[in-house]
Length: 510
Ligand code: ACM
Ligand code: ZN
Image (cartoon, rainbow, N blue to C red):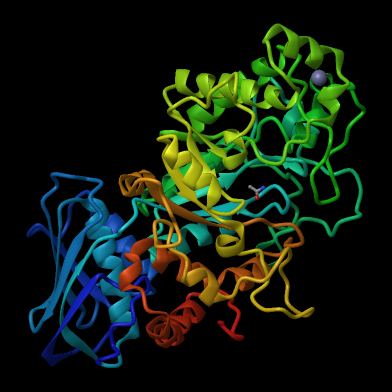
């Protein structure tokens, strides 16, 4: 087999011709629908730049003829043909054309003086191909976030799930509640290494939240790369940073502090206090202004109920709402937050705990469930007709170690590249009651939780090559995947990642 096509994620179908086409330079000249300039020229140039290809059109560039029908913007399919005339990409819309350019860029980048004559026909199996980045446990520069958006685009991931609030920091401004950032973004002492994004350290900058301008700039940058950003605001647990800023929203009244430890903490939002919905309303309205996304993630994971059990206000709420236990308070709160999100015209997403204790408050039908404690939450959610995003931690968490060695960064367990690659969100491991429920599995997200990762270089080391494996498992149908073939291609792909300055792990993959 001609190994020149080493694209990751591998295209669905590749047919090789007999010829090869010589190229003298790894640069392209782009023509779109017969014109050399139009409004999407910059977007498609960006796709080539992400693959390290020069678009300055000097010398003898590869001619890329792009035909976009423009009748379905979100269609991600494309075809790509390489002949003696150059490269021809055809797509129904901009997203498919963008991915065609990413593939063309990867082919040119991997070429050694010649391109193979090929015909590629490609489209993803899943519409939801995501990467979660936690910027709370470690705070990263916007430079690094953009670098990760480039990595998403290079691997045809179309979602960045941005984890913006947690015990260790609140990362966006809410004008009515200024202490969320003034107090809630800052840890109180140095029992942790300071969360400085080492490699891209912005030097004098000590602010630990993202300004509106920075967020809007990142959203714009993502859109130019066909990526949608899904913001996450945790509710009702993982809320130490919020409580440090506004202690009146906790059951005991505090004092609280922005956490400088990792873990699950007993102090959570007091669901007996109506005012917590005011602060969430303000936060969600702000999120709606900053993020055009149709979705808002409302968290819901790892929320202990022990404070509620002895809080007069929470017990009163439980009685008033006819709940059998304080555990059911969480389902009551989820219903309320979900309706606030829906009133803002957005669809809520919650971690799989939102499926629990809901005898008296059924999970609203529009809530998408993200399954992280395995795949069971996803199966249960699908059986209840909810849409599902798969992120089972043992397969899709990139903060797990690559291999079982004390020298490796990473925590909580070991996930080899093979263990990740062999998981498919809607594959044979998913035993659904009714096969039609597969349509509810939108796709999946790999995730980087960033405890102990203050330096983005170490984050990159944990990400690659498993991030690449995740992209392929989200792009190809299960029966089309082949780990042995992936192992060969990743050796070529590593050269590209190296050239693009991503650090990666080079040890065992299985
Ligand atoms: C999670 O990892 N707690 C969603
Ligand atoms: Zn309470």
